[in-house]
Length: 197
Image 1 (cartoon, rainbow, N blue to C red):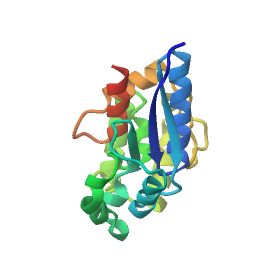
Image 2 (tube, one colour):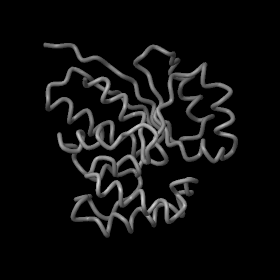
Image 3 (cartoon, helix red, strand yellow):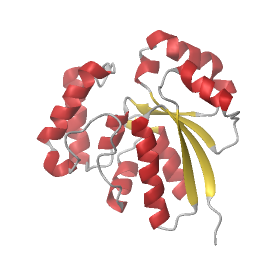
Image 4 (tube, helix red, strand yellow):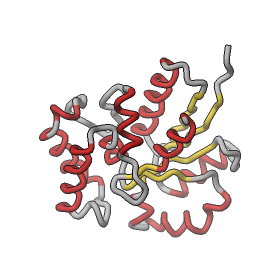
């Protein structure tokens, strides 16, 4: 029996935790000798994530990562971006989703869906300056409703959900849609692709 290579993923909330669980199912069914252990930090603020890293006594070991949405760091809400900038060299690598987990979810679907979301994000201002959740979520939910035939999401979507089961096609599209410098972008997807190569 092959020993699975472990990775610790400290994630900011329920949505990311659910995704990591689904990713493990996907990898296990394909016999990939990798397992991701998710630790739900209960929030994406830097102080919170730093505390979880300290509690778990994490270090830079090439197998421990923090997955976080970049929106609050970009806006520097409550000084998160500033604090991260000062202390990032003493933490496990942060893998940012630009901007939100929901943007990351859409990367698992065909380019025309991602392009339509990019246009929607430009109209709403989310493309250049990430919206706060109260403004963002209704726009995302409406977009999903208009594109439900392409998305095949579990409806209605709510935070904390993993609204679809990962397939080979979803993972291939995630990697294809993850161009550096584009929106949306996911450093977590980059890591997954590197591990699977």
